[in-house]
Image (cartoon, rainbow, N blue to C red; front, side):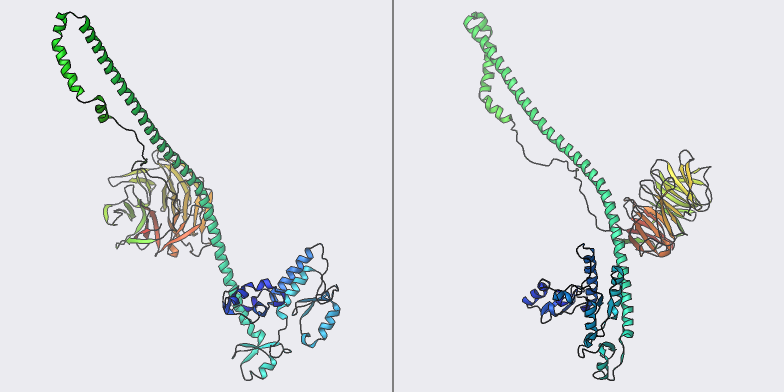
Length: 598
């Protein structure tokens, strides 16, 4: 337990300060946790009043209290702490470090004459707040401490045998023959240990600063994402509300249609009834006023009508209607179709990494790209390998291509030759080469796809970056970047990600060549970037970097802040994201790895 870190002497603590210890004693707990280190210690007999005071902190508190008093317009001078108890206000001109009291010149004379406190460290009070505070703090380590067994003897020695602090009297009596040395000499090693501990705390504080900075940036990024997600939620809400409205409008239309059918049925019945009444009236007229010859001629028609109506009357019209009538009801049910789903906000856990599998074959690998249908296309020397993304087995081999770099596009895989300025489009069925006359390349060129149709970016290791229209076979624009470019990639905003092998830096620039951020050796993370090689961007605009020299793969966000180390592997060289979001990693050892990292 850090017993020297008690915040005040027992004489300065009021009864409120003992509540924790009193509570512990009431609950019959024999030990109390130290408020600094949480180590349990025995509760003194007199509770908190029995705890030793920390004179260093008391001195610091006194300086703070005096500073606060100085700042008060009602207090202009420091009074003697001894005289003020006698209701006298004399100006204090000295301070006893050991007693932690301000004293006037009269009390100083009395203080110096008392044998028990004659060795105390007394310093003058100048009246200058800064000077006095510094003198008090500097004098803290010079104050006298006395032996509990010999109150008039100062503690000046350390017994290495018993590991206790001693006075001269103890050295020659109870510790005679023990290995004792001067206290100041022994304390030097402890001071060195304290300095080491302080450095460790500083390092830990720096780690916390980094973590706070990283989390603050993450919060900033998430707040930006939050606005986007809110917009998406509102769009989804509107779409579903529109679907719900359409559904219930359809239900209302069913009601209207049903009522129309009922009205039509009644109209039909009214029409049939009218026909019946008209026929009946004609028969009545014929019966009363018709000539017997005409009535006889109607005999067959009357007999037929009697037969038909007799059959109809065997089943009432109401019963017939009841059999075909429909009844309208309402019941809760599914509004959306089976294929419809509601959008939800997901708070994803931190990304994990898992090596799924790798190949046993070894290649001289230049670059990798993923085709639209999921094939892993690898440039190896002058050959192109097409690998099944599920098994990594090689299923197709193209020869004499001499491809140095490749990138994915909707039309196929764009590639650039190692020793010429030819750009070509790779499909399994054919390879089409196109020469761009204005394009300046050399032995080390990189290529990346832009979001704009038919546009690609070509960069050489002299820092020349060109935006090329593949269809028109012309350069749209070009600029010079100050650093050597070894691999490039682009994100959804058409920002260009450049890796500088020799400078151990990864740059993010816009389409005009202006720096957005850089990430490299001086970045505050213990995962150093050294000789970065391949770079790629995932669907979240996070950037994956193959740090060849430090045998690790870094993941940073779109603002250039470190997220995690994805994997430790020897000489990671080329990276790409496949159609399922997995990382395809090629190493300088010629190995191919598939890694689940999110």
